[in-house]
Length: 225
Image 1 (cartoon, rainbow, N blue to C red):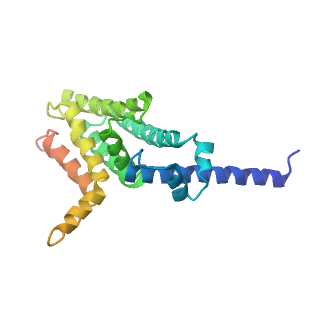
Image 2 (cartoon, rainbow, N blue to C red; image 1 turned 180 degrees about the horizontal axis):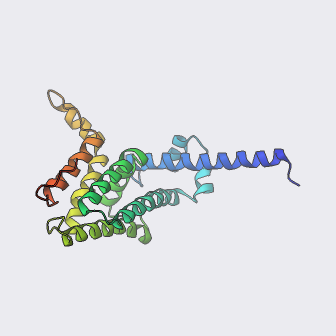
Image 3 (cartoon, helix red, strand yellow; image 1 turned 30 degrees about the horizontal axis):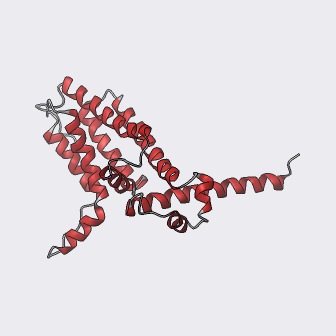
């Protein structure tokens, strides 16, 4: 029969193990975003997480598996959100506005390092990703494609190309959040210095571009804000 003390100790170990795993995921995402996959040492991840570097092998099996775990977990949530929106029967411009807001929320708050991390990976040709992970951004594209095609079919969007629309909306958001630090340096060089736009302002800007550039405004319809 297990004692109360034994149960309590087991809970503490599980809690500590979960905290260590989360610390490694957070530290890995931050460092991979700063330096790219090849520029990050296992010891640097462990130091940033405040744990022994053996914990990376224990919890993930190594640096590559940690990297893939970060990408997979983040994309799994993104894909689920995008595909859920693609199933909505609401007008396509409204759904795309929410999609833009969702990408902005994930990039700025939930996963603030992911856009920089993935931009580095994309520039490298995706060489560090397994084939099944390449499928996840393809599914995001598929979700946007379904929304756009339905919007064109129902007369809510101009006859636009779904791929170009995806690149314009999602691609510009990813680039904006991935290049924040560089943009701050550039704008600081202006005299007088220009204050960098925040994420919420850029999300609204892209939403407005969608409304006025792609969506067909109905005569007499109230403009969405």
